Length: 159
Image (cartoon, rainbow, N blue to C red; front, side, top):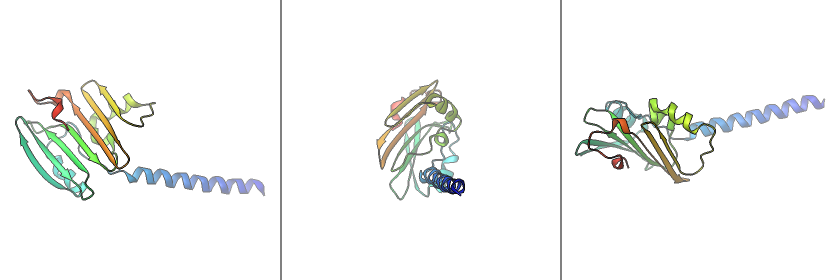
């Protein structure tokens, strides 16, 4: 009789753990932009985020800014060739960095594998630079690829 009680308790614990994992995974606001992706992907990002798009033309690049109703902002920095070379995020939650970094996400994951990154993070892997910071309900991410920066443009523009 006691053995069957343990199975029921373990089953309840597994359901609770599964529920927590699902909640954590679905509670972040996803970002669909990705470094190196074409400019055309920005309109899809705007639709998925249910945000408003504003474009700022700068000398040598443009900034596409998507603002959500909750105040979260995603800035995508676009080269004259139409490629996203940098991304900046400010919001109440941390975005999915693997999605945000696109093809560069694997390099980021390998660089941070086995580390416990609570608090600010600065990762430089090859041409990829990722910096995160902030605190509960106020997170920041800045990511860019040095190899995609337009000629004469500093990485400091990605803010």
